Length: 277
Ligand SMILES: [Zn+2]
Image (cartoon, rainbow, N blue to C red; front, top):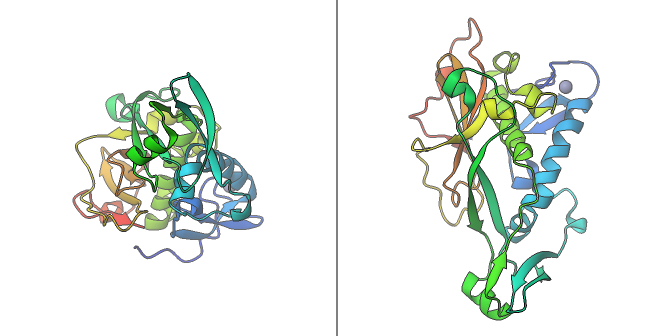
């Protein structure tokens, strides 16, 4: 854990201090995130960011979240079964499978490296180079296949790679605001992409390989996310791992230039353990 700042009283996205400000979860509440920035998002920015978050949590990660018993604001409306495409020898069929038996596969996109790190140039969109598929189901996969007498399962990913990258960027920005204060993110590169104002998310967000957080989560701790930061070439970067116990992929986000006169955004160096929640 890290010490959260006192109430921010300022929107971490647009900087406004006016109007009602809501608390901001750094890692979504729906992913069991516990870090919260008090009074840190204005209504307009909260609308924009929560739309993306909802899409990812409900569609792409709906079944894994249900299987892991993760929190939800609307527990009663949570589906108790999820669709699955299965081939039992007669072609693809869509079947509805209860949460307890669902394979609850999560697909996390793997991106190209942020273009800013390669060339210090902005680019549009984001390039997907692969994906990690992770099985979160309670039933061993072989039992599942036996039970449904299937020969082939087909999963579908229903979220936009861009939306997922915006969510990763939002986690990185919130984390840096919490660790280093609003000044560190006042001129953040990623803010327009997070808010959907620019389409340059791949400039700032990407996957990183071979430079993983030194984290060995306990298997019993089914939900662990981790974030670390460093400074690269005068920029604050954040490393984000979701489902860190299960998913090897790590994202890197170029968050903001190191502000002038800012003493120590280095405080949490790459070679130090990340903060996990
Ligand atoms: Zn705002």
